[in-house]
Length: 129
Image (cartoon, rainbow, N blue to C red):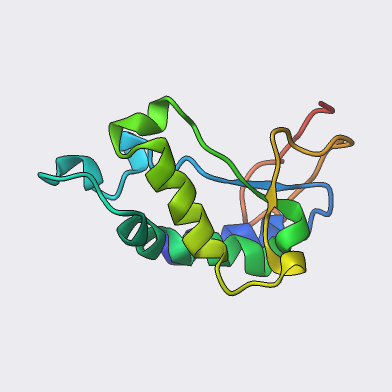
């Protein structure tokens, strides 16, 4: 599944008006089974599990089109807010200021629409915010 997702992300990144929110990975539906463990995950465990997804997005979209975000309180099913934020810091560690994703409370304005390649799926439409 990851190879297809990575290919779809690469194709979508060609749409210059599309930005990526890096988050939602702690939700129980996508929690990498952390919610089944006897103890909550550490920020290091979470960062290591999420790294392939986050790095794929940053490599394809560039840091200026990626934003860390949380889904709290929904993410609370897998971890605490400080653990989540520390996982984000671990993921950004070593990157220069210009390479780090934007910590933004809201997505950038000015989205219109984007058509992806036909082999990726149906048209992706992002309405103006």
